[in-house]
Length: 204
Image (cartoon, rainbow, N blue to C red; front, side, top):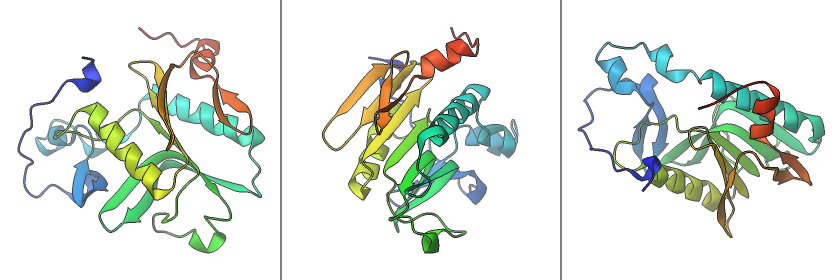
């Protein structure tokens, strides 16, 4: 059993949790930001739990720049920064990076609201949600399945503690060491481990 599979002791959710602490809505229930209880107890400020770690931010930067070097902007639109995705009235999810076909996310669908059409590809870097009522693995698989059912073709999970990349499609789910080349699309491959090594980042 890995750390991701270790069941957590479920604690009763406090009443009157501010809406600002909601990370996602899944199956009609709020999923709060990891660390929201510390905010409620006064031990942390909201801004302390909403920001990405420097490692997460660096990986998002790497992927965004990498995608930007080959993506055809006449064909695709790339959204970042926890882009909201409205699947249905019970599910509003957040994505670190979402690549949409422009024929699907047409200009008239760009608004101040969440996107309500499926991206082609989604990237998630670590888990920013407090997953009290399930294991972290359970959360990953549940969210992944919702994305795939909605129409996403490929979901990437980059897990920094395990240093792996999980690649999910409707046909299979595979997990790879992040030091190998992993195909993204159009014969373009990324390598998180190689990039971090190039930047001189050493992780324990």
